[in-house]
Image (cartoon, rainbow, N blue to C red; front, side, top):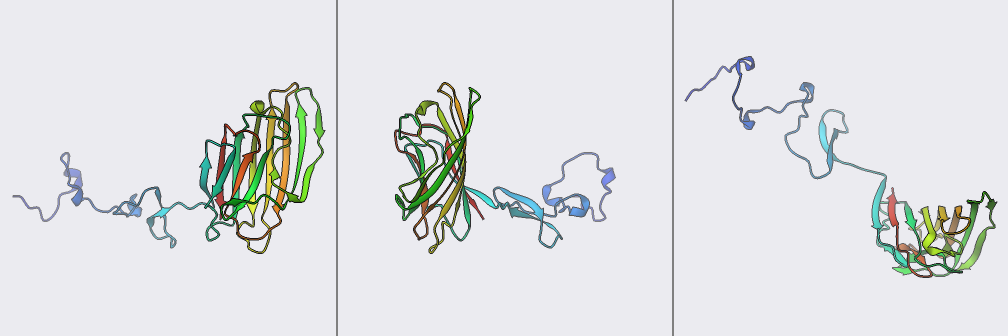
Length: 239
């Protein structure tokens, strides 16, 4: 056995394998991390709060994806995701949903939920849309509204050709954790009907409130005729 006590200059080592337990911890000053262990899944290496060393940290975001429905049907309810200890506001993205049938009175609608049940009364809302079509016509169309006795908030007007109709929207929910104030929503909506002659494109804005108090448990997006047979509905929490 050969024991070297005075060391060997690194420049004299031309080949061979050095055991990992002989490797030093390389500090930041020498291009290393100063870390001797591995973090947990999805953590990142970042500078600590004192700006003195590197450490593993969990990535934080002010917007958190909570749930997604990739196979919407006639009634799409989201419950159990509202958490007032983590989030203040909620964002819903409706991506390219369309009904599988259409006739007079078919609408895509929105309802708040309390104690895992739809609230089906006491809605006030205003839906206003601007239309342009393939014939070059445009119109700032008449608004639709209801005062305190609506059974839902309407995200669309009558859908006459469901198979050719597509709707997308960004919706924000406010006051869902309030117990003494009314919950409200606001939506920015695009929709188009590609099966008509002429084909129509719509930009709509909608705002609504349920005139009742009590913390909410969720919401429902639905069509009152047939099913929603395509698209995605995603819920995000905003801190």
